[in-house]
Length: 457
Image 1 (cartoon, one colour):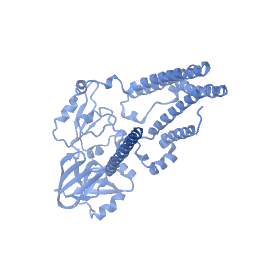
Image 2 (cartoon, helix red, strand yellow):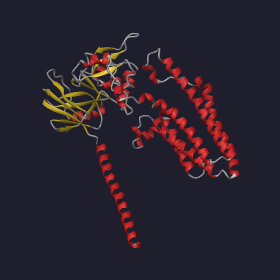
Image 3 (spheres, one colour):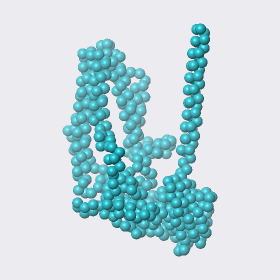
Image 4 (cartoon, helix red, strand yellow):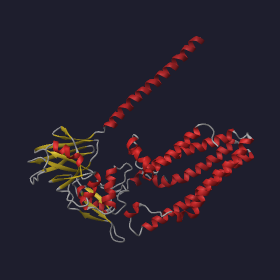
């Protein structure tokens, strides 16, 4: 239906988009791209690539309507078009009909996240998923039928093109409006007074009585890693983020979702745990006296062969005395003459200041020791001991570690994203260049106009 070379580009983009969205189900392609295609590893999930298919398929539909409008007077073309038109309508409508009638028995409607829900709730969630598939299949079938009828009427009875565009536009508007209202509806538009009326729960109020800000909260009374309410009042171990670090997600999957690993809870400085109350009762707060704080010295470093071995080793260990580290860091520590780590019961290290992107500590130890910080290791952070930059190591799969020389020292962590700084400079100079070019064009147009006026005079 679409003429010209653009249809092949749109088809290729759609196919590539679908193949990329398969992720681990097509690992041969996706793993290679993950390691070789710039920024591909930054995707939150491979299914995000389906947005490309959404754009290309919509463009294909627009080009198909454009082709029909341009060639409606060509009777041979319209006659040849009828068969592929009804075939495409039959395939898309037929698939929707199959899902509407039999979709409930074709899939299990289970998900890995079901393990984090109470058992009594899982069947209801699965029924909701089944109902959503069935209702949306009937809904899609209805729009396909109406769209096919409108196009058939246009080709058969030769109504004006404006009416075709108007009717299809109305159909698209109703379709998009009904779907968009699921995500952005009247509940999202509330007065400032109502928006500010959000109040902490009794559990939150109890925790907030602790005036020491150096602790974290784990909320097990909600969907722990898919909610953000806890973060309104506390530094949360959980919470939702669309750009969560892969290593932190690994910790969630391996040490929280399957079974709660209290050693990992302690090393994340979790002082309070909110747990569900009994039937009909409000959530309760449990105080965790084993939380390790913001930073501590360890006595022993245990080396492991790989990151996989590191996360497995954390199933059973005491994070207060032992740190697991990948052997890739061993040479770094040997160069710093840290081995072996010796216990120093008189040593102390404490946080003195915390602001986003800048954290300060003070240490006192009689011999060189390894400090483990309850902060996630990431490449944009730099460490300084008494103003001199030192390399940051990684311990316990996700945490920062730092060899601290004997004596009294001031330790700082600063977050500096060099890529963002470079991008900001490029953006600034690009903006200046664009303003200069636009200004030159406008000046040239004004000059040319003045010149023409002078000639006319």
